[in-house]
Amino acid sequence: MTGQPVLPELTTFPGEVIHAPKGPPLLVAEGVTVRFGGVTAVKDISLAVRPGEILGLIGPNGAGKTTLFNALTGFVRASQGRVTLDGRDITHMQPQARAKLGMARTFQVERPFEDLSVLENVLVASFLKNRGRAAEDHAYEVLERVGLADRATQPAAQLNLARRRRLELAKALALQPRLLFLDESIAGLNPPAQQEMVALIRELARSGLGIVMVEHIMHVIMSLSDHVICMAFGELLAEGDPREVSTHPDVIRAYLGDDHD
Ligand SMILES: Nc1ncnc2c1ncn2[C@@H]1O[C@H](COP(=O)(O)OP(=O)(O)OP(=O)(O)O)[C@@H](O)[C@H]1O
Image (tube, rainbow, N blue to C red; front, side):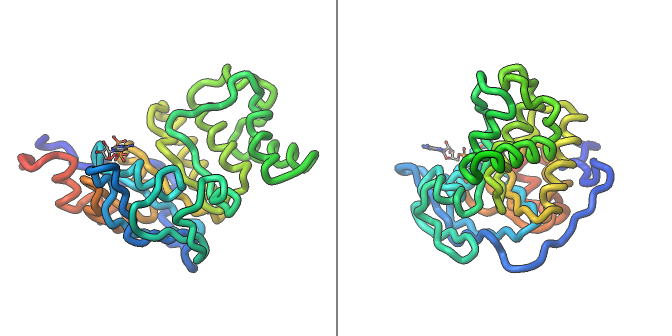
């Protein structure tokens, strides 16, 4: 390990500006705990996300990131704690009810309707918010936004991985969310596709969306996030801006082990 940077450089992508979103938080989680039988996967985690803010969740494998993400989006039940959206208690709401209030998520493994066209896939989500022509117009707008408009009539099954990820994002955006949850949208993409996705996510935040992202590629999450939460064994290990977290001794230890010198 000697001579290697412990965590990657922060300024990997050009044009990066870490901004400081202001205003009251959209999402607030207080003391969220999730137990699966005897396993406490998430223990007493609190966080807040403002409009235009990108919150990055990091931590070694098994740290509890996905479970926390699922508790925030309603895909697993919080055993303790409280989650509010615009001050409204959503702790026990189903994912669909949360979506109606402005939360949308992507899935780590994209699952488009393979036989439908790219446009039809987005329309399925767009129809939940709009009717008739308005739904179609909105679906096109979303495809433009993610750079898939020229693929609108292509079957989803024919898309490469980078475009499938964009389609996954488009389906979430078609719900017109104010808060977007991204589950490893960048892992597995080649570097140019990573940069395109980073630029797109940054643009979405600039337009006012609050974003929570779980991502294993450290330099990506560090260059995108306004605030980073690092978990280990279900607990909060460190939080702060990317530089504070990436240089935190406990974070370095969690990633490299105790015998690192
Ligand atoms: N449905 C479940 N039932 C029982 N235990 C679970 C369940 N889901 C997760 N766990 C456990 O909870 C802990 C946290 O897992 P989780 O998947 O949230 O971590 P993670 O940080 O997302 O990991 P990775 O980076 O590998 O995806 C692990 O010990 C895992 O085995």
